[in-house]
Each structure stands twice: as C-alpha cells, then as structure tokens.
Length: 172
Image 1 (cartoon, rainbow, N blue to C red):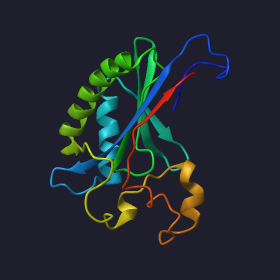
Image 2: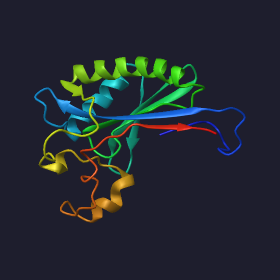
Image 3: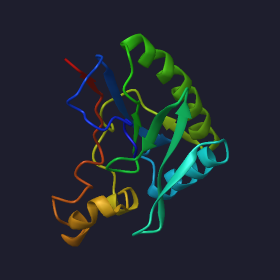
Image 4: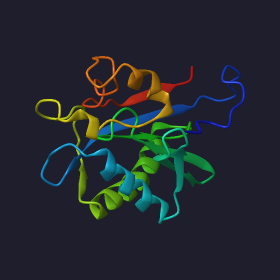
C-alpha cells in the first residue's frame, strides 16, 4: 500500500487529515466473505481501472489502488477477507475526505454487488466468529509469522478477522 508521497512526515507545511475505514464484508446470505470471494472482487476492480496488488510470497491478490485527482486510494482486506479497508490519502479537510469517500464507496458497492457481496455498516461481524476461519484468513507475507503458529493458535490473524474500525488522523 502506498500512503502519502511525503518523504518527511515530521516536516509539515500544512495540516492534513488522514482517514481509514474498515467494514465487514458478507455474502448475500449474511455469512462472512470467503478469501476466494475477495480474490474475485480484486479482479473485478482490476477490470475497471484499479491497479491490482499481488502478494508475491503467496501469489495471491492483496488489494487495489487507484489515483483520484493525483492522490492514491488503497483498498485491502487488512487482516481477514471479511474486512474491507479503505485508506484515503492525506487530505486538506474532512469535507474533502467525505467527497472522496463517496466516490470510492460507490465503486466499492458496485464491485461487491457484482460478486454477490455486501458491505456492513457495523464495526464487527454479527454473531460468533465464522468457521472454518481458515477460509476467511488473508494470505499475506505480513502475517507469515502468525501462520507459522498454526491454525489453532489464538495469535493468528483469524483473531482479528471479525472486527473492523474507522480511524482518523489529523496533523497538528
């Protein structure tokens, strides 16, 4: 994921706002999305002008990026295939973020709909953790250490697969 093109994050010339949204993704029957389902979503984004990222260790798709007015927006399944993260670039205001998010969210909803998936407005998957969790875990070099602990370890990225959060950062 490419964040900002800033080289020195401590040398602010202007105040900026960073916004990240995470929402659970479910199949049309309400069950949490599978890893294989999200692989198809990334392919769909790729067919509409988004740049598809690949995790070369596992040889799987790991998300997409697209330029909006010269600023990069990144979409990934951060810790579980059933969690879609939208990372907006640093922006000049919350209002600018709201406008950009509206455009991005429209494209997200279209791609999920094409793949019989839905985005939840909740911060957590409803109900108990989905089983088997292995079908929903992201395969990523970032989580290779967790993978080595085995599927029954409470420290795998399966632990984080059912939750989502929204974060905002403001430079001071």
